[in-house]
Amino acid sequence: MAPINPAISHLTPTTTLTYFLLLLLAATTTTTPILAITNLTALLSSFPDFSSFTSLITSIPSLTSDLSDRSALTLLVIPNSYLSSSLDLTRRLSPSALADLLRYHILLQYLSSSDLHQVPPSGALITTLFQTTGRASSNSGSVNITRNPVTNAITISSPYPFSSSNATVLSLIKTLPYNVSIISVNSLLVPYGFDLMASETRPTLGVNITKALLDGHSFLVAASLLSASGVVQEFEADEGGAGITLFVPTDSAFSDLSATAISLQSLPADKKADVLKFHVLHSYYPLGSLESIVNPVQPTLATEDMGAGSFTLNISRVNGSVAIDSGIVQASVTQTVFDQNPVVIFGVSKVLLPKEIFGRNPVLTSKPGNTDIGNAQPPVSALSPENSPKMLSSAPGVREEIKSGVGGLQWLSTLHLLCVVFVCNCI
Image (cartoon, rainbow, N blue to C red):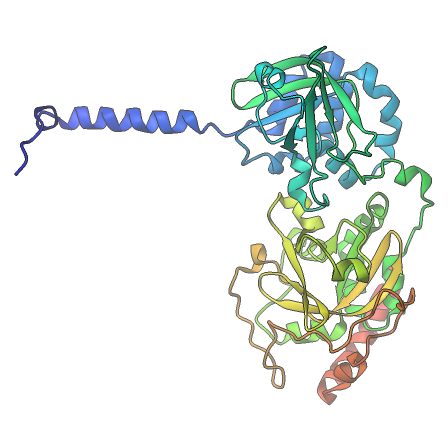
């Protein structure tokens, strides 16, 4: 047997506890969580030259949850004198578009003054918070930092060579070593492909989403829910900027759900609103774009309220059609209800249930004759972007599917009448 180390043999309970506390203290001090965005704005509040930029940040509450699990970042801020020429443009952006623009100014890496001056002339690619949303194509959510070896000037720009958006570093404003760095730059940075002028130059479409659903004839339940919840006004307000994509369950989808243990009506108003927002992407994706989508995991409007990584949809191709997986159910796109840039509305075969509300394994007992409510098969044929008109009734095979089941039609007829009366009173 190996001899016992004398130092170990003399350990007392008090000494052991002291060692444990020292180890615990070391672990907690080396993984200090990032300050909330409210603390960042508190840091900026002592610098009146950045009051306009600080106001923009405080106007976007969702940034708080985005940063809650970050351990290091660099915030790029613009002085009032440089930002004044861009303020009119930022005011015309929708709240979600402005949030993405500000996310592009939050680098997910702590950069000190020495880090900046050690950047090679070839540059360094740094990821921003905007890249994590899934709305940035390729690496357009990153910035390229370069240093002029002659003047030592530091430039921050889009990694795309044809982008005109760039800014020069003015000074280092504040650092909390290894966690937070605040750097002043001389211009607002715009991600490549992000149309800052869109809401100014694009005519207001003013799509009445409820009316479009009523005209589609198979979406009376959804129209009623949207009107009663009030979120439809929020959807219509977000038509500017990047546009919106709505996945609207058919009346038969709600009929299927009513035969299970899942009840939307029993949810509190805020949770019900989250479920409805879970059906909306804050980007315009016509059918052709959905079929060739690069990033299958897409954030929804509920993601913007609840934080990055939550309430996401997985979009893929299954049997030649677009399938949407919520983590609980898989639905298929059955028809294009409305398509006019910047708004597109798709009919889907299932109510999309977020796992954040209903859990990963809810009880989904289907009604007789429908043995697979969780994994609906997409229709045999889908609409092609070349020949899809602006307004469509249904994809081939959908009408036959809806007409099956005499009991379902009788239930829907009564429901349609009630919904029409309700929606007309709301309008």
